[in-house]
Amino acid sequence: MKHIGNEIKRLIEQKHLVKKEIADALGYTPTALSGIMRKESIDCALLVKICDVIGVSPTSFFDDEKPVAKPLSATEAQALFDLLNEKERTIKILLGKIGTNSGQDG
Image (tube, rainbow, N blue to C red; front, side, top):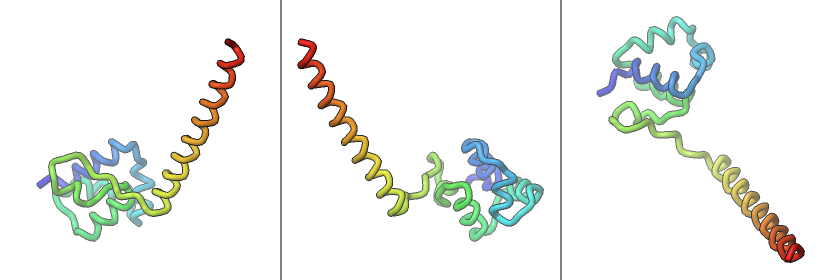
């Protein structure tokens, strides 16, 4: 099993997160957060809370693969779907204009 504290530290650094902001979100001081990052294991409830704050799944601490991103909420998924539809609509409009312009040049 991974050294939980080291893994938390690695994820924070990898995601370029600010330790003070994470500590504030957890209700800890930056010094207390540093203490947590030195521990080999921590309470499961605290691990879940930290995972919520840094945006990873707790399961990423128990396998040797890359951290698993949290699943999208229904709202986030819908926003991405809407964005994709808008991009497709824009592409169709642009392709239509290109087709019209190329017909005029010839």
